[in-house]
Image (cartoon, rainbow, N blue to C red; front, side, top):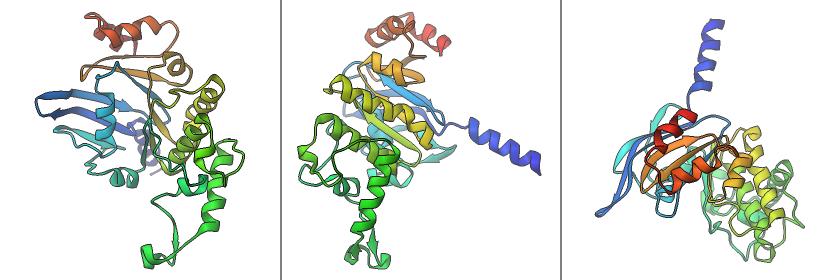
Length: 270
């Protein structure tokens, strides 16, 4: 019996937290994704790279329930899932932070943390119940402290914060509610060096909180700092993967911009 439990535990560790198999997505005559497959391993930070129009955003929207694939399968912890809406993705433990961050400027940090999922009492009253303001405030502050996000106050309106602080709040919210997977779209875009460093720290430490991460980024230096693997898309097709290191920098760039011989080389280095 003990051996069976150990074998089951080992199988769970080896099963990818997320697996995409042969996903295809069309918009009319445009083929946005063509038979794309990838895996996200447990405790991994995976970079999704590619030039504009490569299909990166379409793929994450298929994973977050904004779009539904025309063909292919998505597996979460080895079980096939169909994600019909962003709410279903959240219920499955996946959170996505897009470039616009989806924050409300006229609300404070606590309000933004729980926007759309405010806890109420008694629960059976649903939207007619009383919002648990004290609970939300204490839990939001605990989450920010555990992730080492330093803000002047959790009561400050988001509109008064810097770009880095806003990104940190959005990322911390996703990591607090994304029980399994967090997807970040260009998380350091338009941030200064100091602000980028704080966001990169959050990403790098996410596996310590039991969260696996997919990062879309055009900044290869940031990818090299925090990611374990990099998968490259070009014109809707997966062209290869490689370990994001300084030694592989030129190789990754070659896959992104095009190179007939790069696919096989990239798969061998993965």
